[in-house]
Image (tube, rainbow, N blue to C red; front, top):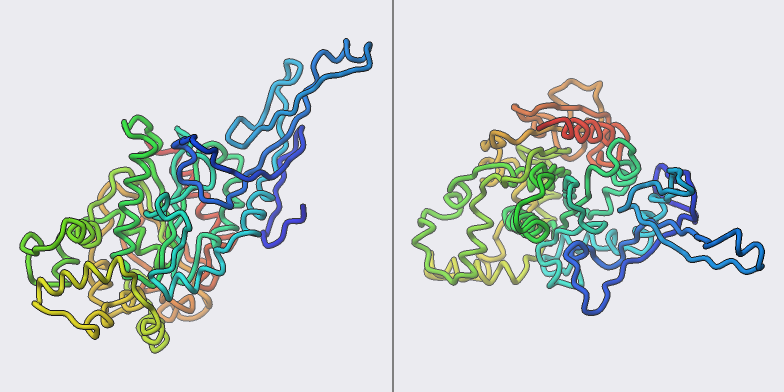
Length: 422
């Protein structure tokens, strides 16, 4: 197989024939470990031909053998004639093959402009948009990746390729990804994210016995960094008070609408999130979102019916009336990220919760410029910089720095550091 698009092609040397396999759900078989793997994901497997009774077969001229398949879920070695020998795997090939048939890149613009655009065909299984690239494994720390605006999980390909082929991280982390319609209001997407992570943890570990699930690392790029922050703050009533002066408990709406409002407007630190990483994150807004490009884009974005219907109910209850013009003026994500937006002003004033370790990776296009002029083409350094982080790395890069070698190496360092903690 010829691998295209990935900076490095890794193939672990060993015995066996490395292959790429598709995952199919068996009718009538419900395995929770496979519940969050979407169609189209490919995995690396290795085939072995294991002959039986070779000496006897050589005498008779007939040797019986069976084919066995090993996956990367197992140990990367096996016992042959009482000796431990490595297994050959082609993880880069499996990732490349997954991307080759993926619609992810084509979904990026549609996912920005249309809140109703379906990111998954099987909406019942992926209604909270959290998915895995391999079956869930007990004892592995979840690494959650959240992409940015007009983007998709495919933009993490270079990082995923490096991390899953890293011997020091092998068997220590499992990749979880969150995707979303990136034009939707950030608090709406944040509610889906936090609920999705809670659902996934409960689904995989209902009794709370897996300590690895309590060491989750969440990494977000750009708008994804703002969503990441929502997993690690106590917002109190600030977001709600930005929207209305009516106390939340005095709003008479349906249970479904109340649930949506509660998860979208009120945030507590997720107890299983231990570490967060902000990459090119507009902590104090983006000058692009605040400019004419951002305003024009906002006019092109349509919101989902699952949000407009509850908002209509709320507006009628609070203001006594609603109108199409009012609904059209609901802030989109691009509006939220404008430096003067109430959302940005609120979230920028909220510190990461005690007990959660934060890191910043901030790209700068022209590091030779005066520091006060630093930016990545979308976000200024002074917006991305926040106090109180355990580390901050400035990298020479444009805004899409998540696939740059220096950024990937810093993420690797953070993940190794995370393994050393309690």
